[in-house]
Every structure is written in structure tokens, then in C-alpha cells.
Image 1 (tube, rainbow, N blue to C red):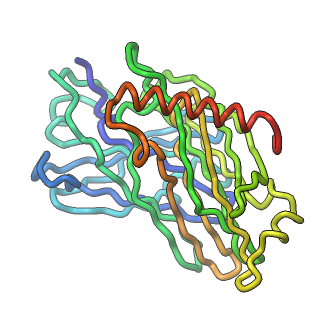
Image 2: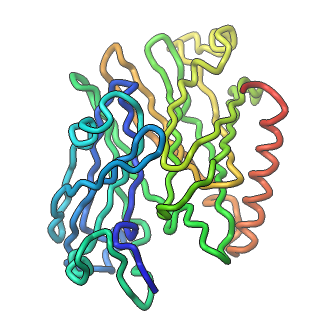
Length: 307
């Protein structure tokens, strides 16, 4: 079968220029399971997309030797092409052993089966130029939004309690829409709701994301001011909420940035996929339950509270 070397190990990343944050990505040559591809080294690349989702350039970052980790500054590289807007970049790791068998990294390679690089995670870091930094380690599903014939339809169901708003703290929901298929053209219709600690739904948002794009949403801008004041803790002044998000037509990767610009502090968190904790191990049954749950949440969010 024909395999794309660039899509063996990919990490889509939102560059958040609008928030004044710098972006770095940490990549390792080590297998998190410690039993596969031992002693392998990699070449690292960065695909850069425009804010509209158009591919702009592929940049060689350098080599990651065996049993090593490297941290790459994405901001300095991407800013040459996209100086001020939020946009997508994608980090790629390509095994040197496979790369030596092709003329260009963009070429496909003929293999009997897809090599197993599942859970090869990356570290994403956001930082203020004169402040602190926050990072998160995450992975993306193999064949992300590839829409391979015969495979189940991609969808998203996720939640987190990582929402905090106060006079100094702001939370931004960051949605990333990427595919390992360069011809991918789907629109992802992502909906989410915000719930108070009492369980009341305080806001709903529906967002259409084009392919190879990112979207940052300031949570304080979609919850009424009077609700935020009502929910504020009398001790620390923070209003906290739970997030539930669903998308029936694509995998959308949500990240959360908790930022305090006045003191230059930032934290990053990913969301929790409920199916990892609640759904059965049988794959077909899990997919059916997840799809049905996504549909129910989407229907609920379409009935009010937000745009």
C-alpha cells in the first residue's frame, strides 16, 4: 500500500498570534511504549497554513537523533508567512530509515502495512514573551479525518471542567481542524455548551470550521456578564464552568488556554474524551454509542442559548 511519510506521525498545532502568545513544540524520538522502533532517528518538518486553510510551505526543522528530544520555536518560523493572525501548523516526524528510500519527503512509499506509531505524543507550549509558559502533551488519532472508504465516520464528543473566568483570568477554547488527507474539504460543524456548577446551561456556541483551520473563542465573550458575576466565588472571584462539545462530521481537537495577561501567566489543557472512561471496549458498539451521544448533544445545543 502507498504510505505518506509526512503523515506517519503528525501533530496539528494552533498558532495563537491574536493572544500575544509564542508557540513551541517539543518532539521526541522515543517510543512512549518503549518496545517499538528502538534506536530510530527522525527528521522533523513543519507544514504552515494560512488563516484560511491554504497550504503555504513545508519547512525542515532538523534531525531528532535516537533517544533524544528537541524543542522547536514555531513562532519565529511561521511568522515569516503569517505575521499576526491565528492559523494552523502541523509538525511531522519522518523516520530516517524510510526517508532514505524516497527522493523527496513528500513522496509516498510502498509498504506492506502502516507502521505503528500510535501514541507518539508531542508537547505544545504557549508563552508570553516576557512572562511564563504553559504546556500540554497530546496525540492525534491515526488517520485523522482521512475519510477512508469503509471506515466509520469521524466525529467528536468531549468535555472538560477547565473553564475559569475572573478579573485577571481568561479562558480561550481553541479548536483545531486538520486532516492527513491533503484533498480534505469538509466543513466541521462544532457545537458546545457551558454549564454552571449547579448544572444550568449558561451559553451555547455553534462554529463552522473550514479544513486546515483553527478558531479561538474567548469564553467570557459568550456568557452574559450578569451570569459571570452571579457565579463568581466570593473568595477568589473566579467563575467556573463545565464544557461539553460535539461534532458529528469531523474530529475537532479542542484545547483550552487559561491566561492571565496582566501577570504573564498561561496554562494549557486538553479535554477529556468521555468514551475513554464510559464506553464499552467493543469497537463497533463504542462507535455507535458515541455517534448517538454526539447527535443528542448537537440537537440539545441547537435549541437555544448562543449563536
